[in-house]
Length: 497
Image (cartoon, rainbow, N blue to C red):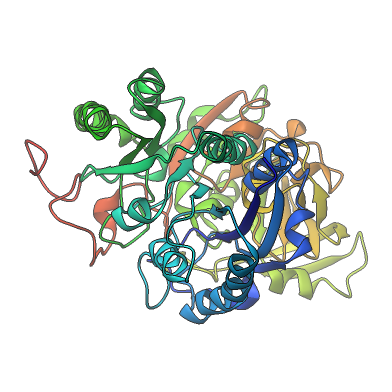
């Protein structure tokens, strides 16, 4: 079918408890044909484009706004996106349009709107001629999936993997459902179910419980009784929104079958919820146990400064621990544009005294002053080694860390980036001429999404407690909007009715 399908994207995971506010300068903005150029970059938009190509659709590209996780989004950014999208949509509707496809994250919160994606879908449906069109899309497993989103869409399809190695596949899966809708003339709809469960990021790996069991059950139920697809949404614990937390949605045609599936999934989520609250180790205890390292690298995973969750990526507690224990042959990465700039006049091989990191969060003990040797500098650009990297879901194949520098202090190698870059691909190190497998110990600012890259080279991995905004216990966060009661914030023997 030579259908005309409008394509737009809005992608941001908003940490509601950090001090920063995310403005337009933080977003990569693409318009028109720039969206079509994403073909081949491994993203969920690329997945959609692959199906559009297969089906012979005419894609009408509107706008794509995307930024890495960070604090509340200035509402003006959302309005700017709508100003780009609305006239393209109106013109396409006037000329003839068959469907709309949205490339979403699903956890955007602005300074005025806690359900940005729900508001976007509401506005789209209100445009003359759009109310009756099929609206499909792809979104992140860490979304805040809301009733408003599900009521306004025919089929939003979420990732099934964490780490998110299936961004392309999810975009393609959602587009294939749209193709099915257009070819058959049958319109599914979405049934939503919340759970009153908030899981920390460290509890959302799909190889671990409870997510593994939930995904397994969802796949068993899919395809039965008119069910087209089932979304298992882990939620984003740093979203201060009414519907934050674990949720499910069924895309299908039979409400009774959908509700029965949702009942089973919600019951399993409640029965297994405690398994999503993993413990963390004390970093000093870990280093005392593992040193000296006979064979590395050993990972010190630091969820509190999880760049993929919106943390600043310049926390100093791992660095301080490595210094306290005088660890030889260790590697850490810090987002520190001031230190990179300070090295501008230092020759390679020269030395400088820097105040490293510690500026991005008031929870951090502050910068660490060190005498360092400059090993190398670069423009910070690299190409993903793994197109299924979690980074492909966020930014596509090509990554820009901004001007970067590698420095060394005693046995510690420190990669300094201008732009915070989640540690989800080993090309981040190798682009700087460093083999990460040569380290004895590596500090990793992540929760789960690093596993795709780092587990393949690690001899051991420890999740350690540090101070930072991406805490692993939701009870330490100052929620104001989340529905109550909710686990683990409240004591509940049974789920609320």
